[in-house]
Image (cartoon, rainbow, N blue to C red; front, top):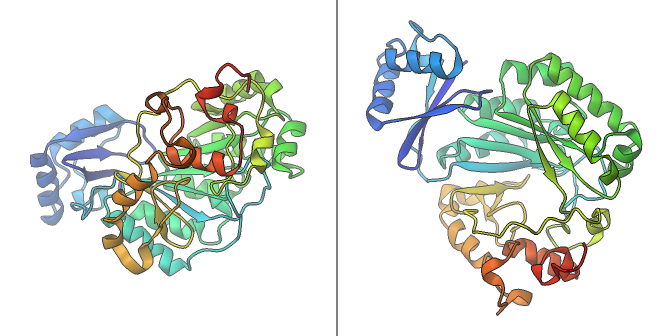
Length: 372
């Protein structure tokens, strides 16, 4: 199995290694040198052996290029990232979940494989598996192996409930992901199990984090701050220091992407962050989202006018930039807003809040003086 992936990215070329954060940019001449070494059955060029030693501490000297380095061909489109919602089903019932529905359904395995080939051909190097809970999908292992074999740098968004299972930790140790991001819903059984509405969920998380550490799997913890655990934030940060290589904190709870307000009840007072100005987003232009049935949209929130990849193929993706641009227009409740230049929320998310009839203080700086 390959140790290094070399891939075109727009008008540049990059070399990356599964499981490693560092990468490097290479000129077109060296990309063509690797193509020639691969097709000619030559060893890994000396320049790449030296660079891999410096960047990742691995020795490629004398190894055949074919099989050691996966040289991806030029892509037909200019997408670099995608998220794949392999299944909306979940083994938890979290109060704050943004999904409009959580049905256990999706493409059959052969269609999943075809979908991944389309993503590769679109240029996708960075692929995020999400759900629902992706690791409970019946085809997750086979789909993960397929994506890895196609030369994708994989991130898994997971609740961590399956990380303790040897088949999963073994897979991730054998084929290292770029990142495993585990959601942390509290620092105690009481808070964690209350938010997930699943008794024993916290114990499963701890088993998973211990197993990942023993298998040397790099984990990032996503601290989800809600009314159930806001008093435990310091303890949650301490857990991240113990188990994770990094952490991110999320205090903003949103409606479901179709405007159902129920998740807003989980919002923790005082943790609604409206400090950063929305400065634009390349959704639909450089990355996109795919749902369990192969429907591509600009992102996880902006799901209007989906493109059916299984029917339309890559040609359908050429429509996505225009679809995305239309969804980013300030319409509806945002039309004519004098504060649009300093808005904190993207248009699709603002629309979800408006359809949920959420108060302005939940998402708009009109209510900045009001405590959220």
